[in-house]
Length: 424
Image (cartoon, rainbow, N blue to C red; front, side, top):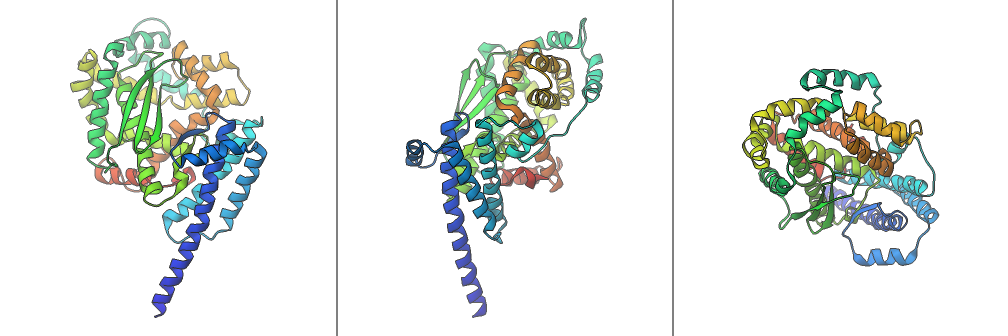
């Protein structure tokens, strides 16, 4: 009898808890939509009730009213005792930090500016490490003997890698081959919702290289920017990051497992400037390593992608030996962005930094500066996010020699409301 009563009480408490949090979650969604009325880039995806969007647009809530409401909801959440179930606890913490980010973004839209690290902590729940110029120079020194020819390292690098450009008339065919393989490998380990799919569009005049616009109902539109030459490594990078097992899978699993199965409406909206983005970008980047080990990727590219692009497969090892070193320069973008956001360097000096320490040709450096100018500290979500996700997965025993466990932990992370601070 006592056990029955205890179970009944737990059920009543859980129901009351869920009702309280569900009400807050609905108000959170409407606040994100309201912020989107002031900040056009804020709502990256929404597939909740269309009448909510109509209602919010008609209300025309001010930034001050949004901030006040977000603060009230956050404080209400903090007063609710933590539930016993881990995923419900994660949900409560997720909503609390997402609401805090709504407040921070509202202050930004009103004109307040924070230092780079303060901004990334307020919006993305993380701060990237700082590296001196000497750190990147050491990596560049390792690259020097690997790039033949005359001129500066950047000039030699750009001349050397012209042989690895995917011709525009072959780009879609190569990318579709990469997508097909990434999807097959993902489906072998993750059960995806029925009828999931995406379409690929080719665009120009964008500050980014690729973008996933999630539409809801397990559909995405993936846009690929063709302003600059597309190199052979980008085929799998784009297919995995934007598609399988990256953004498309991440969004589809959140919609299926959390919004539809559990009724958690907060996952019907994705605010771009929020902690969710670090997990989204981090899992998308790390997903490239989950879907292919290095040997598997090299083998597939030599046999399939290099020939499809008309590139000599015999040079694949040479190409990726250089690309592996280039990846170590990823945090140079953070340093350029940190200096720019903090007002230490201007646009021209930021581009020059990227040319020197990230080994970007002028056009690519200028494109990245446009990205930094628009998205500011968002840049940490790619490299820091990837590193945080990798550490989280590997510390749970999911190493390369245990691929099934690696996939299982990765899928659980994709389908959970885990925050960046939870990845530590």
